[in-house]
Structures are given as structure tokens and as C-alpha cells.
View (tube, rainbow, N blue to C red):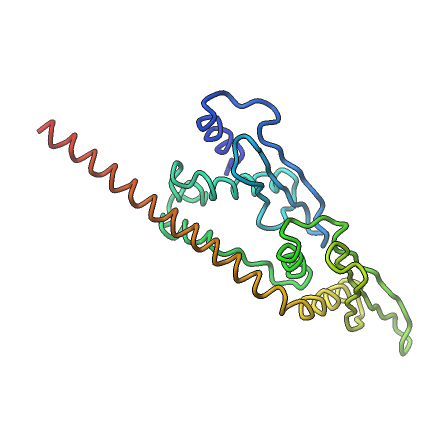
Length: 228
């Protein structure tokens, strides 16, 4: 779906003028886990806050569309209708709104660590925020790997070490898993608060959309009755 195009159109309507270059500022960064790209979107004049993509995208363009989608869900759901924001007209509209209440990270440990870092830092993370270091050694005639990970912007002096593994990828997963477990007690209340806020906003949007839908039905019925 062309979320950037939809956002441009609605933002222009809000501004009551044509959009110009620089009105919506997209910033794309590499995913620290190497899974693609993240994007943030800001516009001090047209948007209430900065928005970021919900997860890493394989392309820069996809990341920008994801950030635009986040802005649409937060600020323009009532104007568009929830089915349009969700990108699927056949989905139930109420489900499309309530589905925005929670954002769940991917299942792999590195993605979970990125999500934990977002909670702790209160922003999207950059490649420099999560640094992995690898140690290679021989054991029983086989090459083994052990990784450590450091959240440089949160606890720059603390290293989280994972169990050794037979591949570099698994060693990094093990280090990320160790970090997520160590930070869980701090992240949990922040995560709960984030989800509660999203649930509240989604519920408010749903009620607003229902009220607007009923108002449109009433207006349409009044016109029909008047014509009769």
C-alpha cells in the first residue's frame, strides 16, 4: 500500500496547502541486527510527534512506508477509516483499529533486544546503539564462537555474554538472549506502559470512528427521508 502517498494527501488537507519538499522528513538507518532498515518520520508543523517503523524492513522505501503507516494510524485513522490504514479493505474495521494497540517484536533474540533497547531509550535504535563482539576459539578440534553485546547508549560499560556456539549467528543470538533476560525486569514495566498507552489511543480512535460512522448514517437517512 502507498502509505506515503496517503499521508501526503491527508497532511496537505490538514495544512490547507500543497505539500512541499521537506514538510515530511524521513530518516532511514541500518537495522543493528542486519535485518534491513528502520525509518523515522518527523514534521514539526504537520505532525504531533515523531514516528518510527514498527519493525525492520528489507528496503529503505519499505521502511519509509512503515513510518508513514505509523503516522496514519496515530493521527489520521478517523479520516481514512481503519480498513484503509490497515491496508486491507476486507478486514473488519474494528479489528483494524484495535490491532494497532500492541506492537510485538519478532521472535528472534536480536529483534527482541532491539525492542528492549527501544523501550529503554525511548526512541528507535541505531546501529551504534547495539554492538556485538565475537571471540573465536578451538575446542575438541572444532571452531567455536562466543559473543558479547553492549547497549552503548544505555549501559556503555556493561557487556552481556552468551553461551558459545558453532556458528557466529547463533553466538550473537545467545548474547542477545542473555541481554534480554538481564534487562527483563527493567523493560517489563516500560513495555506494559507503552502497550497500555497504545491500547487507550486505539480505543479512543475506535469510539471516534464509530461516532463518525453513526453520524454519517444519520445524515444519509435524513437526506433519504427528506427526499421521500
